[in-house]
Image (tube, rainbow, N blue to C red; front, side, top):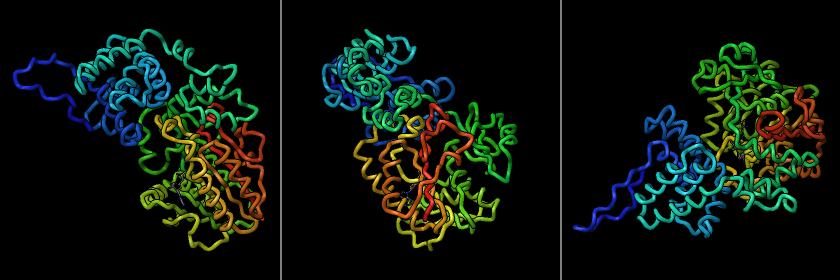
Amino acid sequence: MTRPPRRPQRPAGGPRPPRRKPLDPARRAAFDVLQAVSQRDAYANLALPALLSERGITGRDAAFATELTYGTCRVRGLLDAIIGAAAQRSPDAINPVLLDLLRLGSYQLLRTRVDAHAAVSTTVEQAAIEFDSARAGFVNGVLRTISTRDEASWTAELAPDAATDPIGHAAFTRAHPRWIAQAFADALGPAAGELDAVLAGDDERPQVHLAARPGVLTAAELAAAVDGTAGRYSPYAVYLSGGDPGRLPPVRGGQALVQDEGSQLVARACALAPVDGDTGRWLDLCAGPGGKTALLAALAAETGARVTAVEQAPQRAALVAENTRGLDVQVLTADGRDTGLQPGFDRVLVDVPCTGLGALRRRPEARWRRQPADIPVLAKLQRELLSAAITLTRPGGVVLYATCSPHLAETVGVVADALRRNPVTALDTRPLFAPADQLGDGPHVQLWPHRHGTDAMFAAALQVG
Ligand SMILES: C[S@@+](CC[C@H](N)C(=O)[O-])C[C@H]1O[C@@H](n2cnc3c(N)ncnc32)[C@H](O)[C@@H]1O
């Protein structure tokens, strides 16, 4: 990933340039990942661990690189506004590599305890190595201007007025695009006063949740085995206090799965929905990578039911097979809108592809990468997949529509369309999520990280008439 410096060769006999000090390993790693994210659409949470391991960066250096990378990715839009004000030019007019350096430097100045002199000088030195002394001077000027004030002072000047534009103000100060803050406020409805808590939650590192595989071990046994605590809502959930869950023996041995508690509740709700005369034909129509399929299939096994899992992407279908090894699951690589399957399923889970706005805390850069234009494209696909799920369900059977986004166009908008066009009735989904409470006015369910500690999953159970 390391690129050669852009500095031009010194002409023979010319003056020797000052010796420049390159970035230390932690800052260098953060800088490289920031560039991979902004120039090659990399995912920071995949690129950084790979790079740290490749370069043997561990301990405090790894922790510092992680804070710099994830923190800078999360607040990128806020940093850009401050950089733009300090540079007195649009961030779009700044060379993208220089802009990533400025983001790295300004993040240290505004959001860390790093000594201001170190934050500025390390960034300026790297600008000189990457470019030339003129642009190093530009970086020096911008960062020195930024360093004269703290974040609160900058946001007080640059944020929209809280009285006339409360959502714009909350979005700016909590470093979110305005359209996402608006979408959260719309979904919160009368609870829009919780918007600040929702936005703040996206900057918190989510607690790792495990799901004990039903019929194999209990949550209490899993908690004891991994030194965790039993979950609040899902009977299978265990919360971990830290560490790498992939190294835990129950996870390596397939007795437990890393899975957000909200996802566990969704899979469980599908199994709990009231279906008279269940014949044991269960379907998961958007299954990859198979987390919910695994829990659903383990619950199916308790009643002798069998799960068919459909996934369009071959690599993800392979993951479904891997994650459900040992369970009675038929995996099919197909478009969920055109599976060729015989209709008549008793229960169908359709956990649709979505914007992922309900899991922004898991992907540092996602809030700036998603665009409002993504919504209508996804909503169309979601409507089509839900319609296919309904067609594949027998009369009296239940479809559980789920999405990891609280955006109304992806949640109630899709469900309202299905209710209009199909012979289906909305069931009260809330009892299927008991003992979770604060689920909204019904009949559908909306989970929230700040209320439930889960991703912001939406779920609607529809009974086919
Ligand atoms: C939200 S994810 C499902 C997550 C999964 N239920 C789990 O818990 O592990 C949506 C999945 O739908 C798949 N997908 C996208 N378009 C599809 C289509 N037309 N038919 C079937 N699957 C599709 C995506 O590849 C993705 O794996």
